[in-house]
Image (cartoon, rainbow, N blue to C red; front, side, top):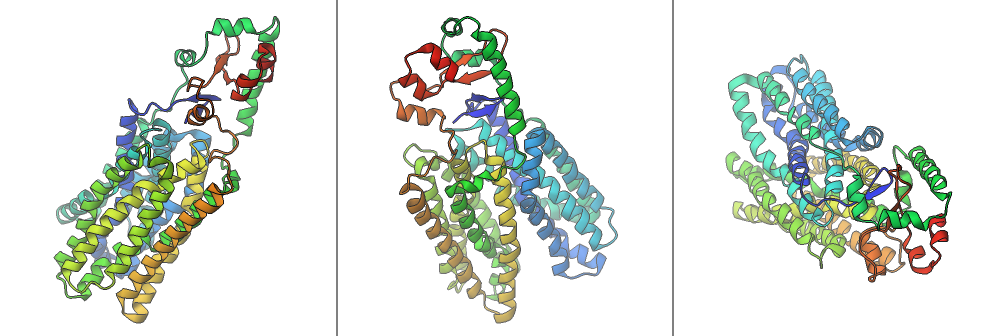
Length: 499
């Protein structure tokens, strides 16, 4: 599927500089998801210095995550207005500056504003554009690329947590925050390598017929007319560009995905938040209880790229939405079965299966979304989905905590989370089968069904690359000749005028 650059379809390289983009996305994903959890190692020191409770310090991580999810539409607007690279550079400076300012705070409210709001906004401005760039550079290998990038979360969590302990012991929480702020400057480096795809004249000429032949096919006097038409159309496209495209809600697949994702997030993070306390209440020592999260992270590291590899196989990729449904069902059943665990061995077995299923969900979630809406609408779709997920994040874990306080029974929490994930899996699978496949709904990209895969499927006798021609000698604007006209219009002059 081509990426539109200045009105020209550019094929993702599926490699080359894309591997550098993938590495940067790996780092950004690691910081975005692991950093809000890693700062929890400083909470005890903050409680002592500011004379607050655990719930007060826990709001720092909650605000970070809320900013990461809730500012999705803002990120989409900035990306559509300024591009991915400038947005990520500003985000890196904000993420770093927030932690540096947090090291000089005098009360918990100032921490909320600096480490929570400013750093959270900076991470958000890096996370979403990195996923957009990854989708621009990869097409055939995109599932594998998404899986490898998603593996940054467990890797960074396993590194940042012990690093935070060392910094806390050596420099105190203020020195640790300062150094953490310096580490976040690496987000600027990652943003700097996010080079946008460019349309090169030589590359364009390789996918079209002989430009001299196409030039001769135009009648005399039409070259100037076509050149002006191309410039006018190009200007019109710029005027029509939307900062936030709400037309994605006209796509049934997007609505189904959004509803399923909202239900998913209600219970997805609950087990990891309450697992350690659940183990402690069963009499498991503190160190062994904390080791359970390490087991999940270690399994998750391998589960994400492995799932991404299998999702990219030719037979499985058209059914990736159903594979995602299976991952949700697997995760939900794991939660339900863990509710009856009575010893440490049972919890270890749960962590192994939870790590596999959680890694599958993490590797497939954005691949499914991009497959539904296409690369052109992905920035707006991702921002809107993250905003809706932010509401679920604010509802799910607090509701689970209230149930624990009210009934003192952790089994109810795991039953609740598992039921929500199972419901999301069943809804996604059935809705995708009934509402999309049965009704013959248009492709995810909407009416613009001009990607190479679609053309090659409907016209096997044609070359798989898009037919294009050059508007005059000095005009770089490449315009594609519709496949319908290519098949049914034998008059070359009429073909070029209708294009």
